[in-house]
Structure formats: structure tokens, C-alpha cells
Image (cartoon, rainbow, N blue to C red; front, side, top):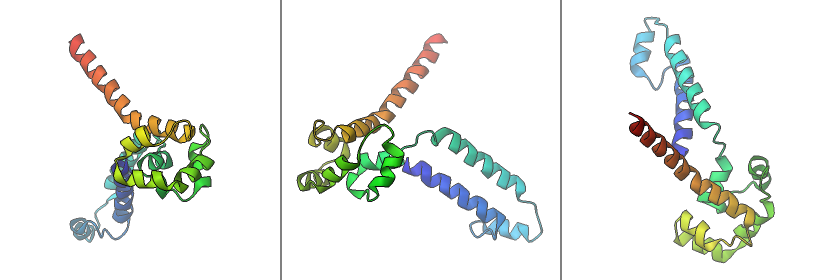
Length: 157
């Protein structure tokens, strides 16, 4: 997801750059001196940005994904609640988790899957574990769905 967000931001920078001084495009800069129109290229980048937004903005993961990857990096608990707490009450759980030295050490010694599945107690942190499990299984279930669809297409042919 980080790569997708990074690529989206890169596209926005490239679009602004094409409309400006073309610092990232030295060859285009040479061509523009001949007053060529770059609006078709800007339009293409706009369409690509729009396509990425349509496909990936519905996956409003942001802070939810960060909780799963490294819950100790979240500094704005109230901001987190606006994004994620519509479904889960996480403020106090996150603060308690971050204050737990044993969990912090365990997190540093294992991968995030193992941390959430084995170290974090579902009874002590029910909201956080629910978010983590949802996030950890999201991409696996997407893969299963897509591979099933692909298999069905092969069977039907």
C-alpha cells in the first residue's frame, strides 16, 4: 500500500512539474522551448491519477495499516480515532499497548503477523486485535477471491 501511495504522489509531482519548469523531464524541457503543448500529457497523468484514486482510495487504510505494521509509531491518537474508530474504540487500548514495555520488546523481536497473532491478547485489546486481524487478512482474502475468479474463468472456457 505504501508503494501505491508513493506512486500516486509521484504522479502528482510529475503533473505539477510538467505544468511548471519540467525539472524531472529534461528532454521535455528542451522540446518545450519550441513551445510544444504538454496538455495531452498532463491530461494522461490526470486520468492515471483518477484511476488510482478509484481503485485504491476505497481502501482507506492509512492509520489502520500503521496500527498493524507498527502501533508504536502512532502519535496522534485522536486523529486515529477519526479514521478508524468509527467502528472500533481504540484510544485507550492503543495508549495501553504503547505503554506496555513487554509488548514493545516483543514487537521488536518478531514480525508484525506473529506479534498480533501471538503476543497481543484479544481479551485485553479487543478493538486493536480486531483491526489488526482485519488488516492482516484483507490482502489474503483479496488474493483468494481473485484466484477463485481466475479458476472459474478457466473452468468455463
